[in-house]
Length: 412
Image 1 (cartoon, rainbow, N blue to C red):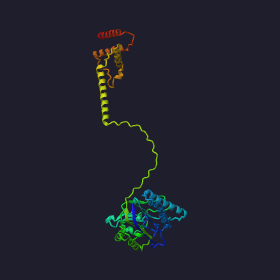
Image 2 (cartoon, one colour):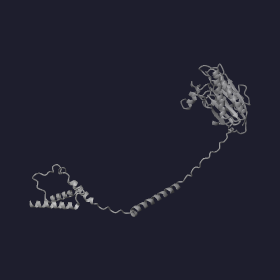
Image 3 (spheres, rainbow, N blue to C red):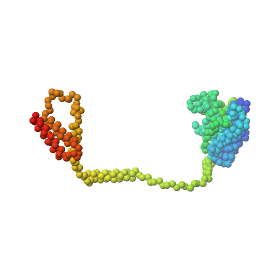
């Protein structure tokens, strides 16, 4: 984009003993060919505030001018590099001329008109207005920087009203400033716009120009709306309304007369990098679908079912039956041994307390005696050791003894 413009400056001492503001281009040296504009307000009450503001103006302008003169688009990286260079210069100046416990500092506002449009940056409470006097309502102020000040933060969070902020004793306390040897360096707020039309104004000013201004910028609006077609008369009006201000007050006024061409896009620099050979990777196995997985599961279940059926059929119908075991000769003997063990249990142990027979109790009946003899018969058989006599001889002997006892009992 190409611009035709007029530029004006205000540089007033106010009621201060020395001027701590600095502007670039310098007062009464500004021309229509300038494209870089900077206003810095040296911190009041700090030693060497004018030194800090001058260092920042000079250093940043040296870094930004070559970019604009080469017809390039200013990038955010280049702007931040200019700010960091100014901070480095502040560090060096502080090392050479230490100013004691109070360090020098300054605010910074900057407008750069380049092939990509305009770039606005600021640190502190100095302001930049992009004004379109022909517009109405909110479009009148196309852009206004947001002050880095304590009262502005308090208004934003609702702790102060705009009227209270205007008269607050803390209205000069700023929350972001360019100073040497800060542990955390300040970063500028950056704004871009390619919406620039003939008749627009860029108004850069220190806070000294705004001592009479309201929070809604009504005085600035009225002055620019009434005198926008006569920039020299507008500059004179701004001087008059700020003549009684106590602080130093400085400003740069840029009026756009014409704009040609479209905004360019910053060039993307691609470093020369030798591409690495592609790495061959093993192909991933094909992903099986859910349908295939279900089909495989059904096949496995079917095979297992067939195996189970065949196993049951073999157990029920095809497995050979084993012949029942023949009872051995010792089985009867084993049973009689078990009975004999029971019969040989001492009578005293088998009887429960209170169940002993009295002397007057009647004798056992004959049938009970017979059963006792039969039990003794079985016990006699089981008590004989294996191999002494055959089973037949044992039986015969027991029967004979039993008959003899019966006969004796009858004879008695």
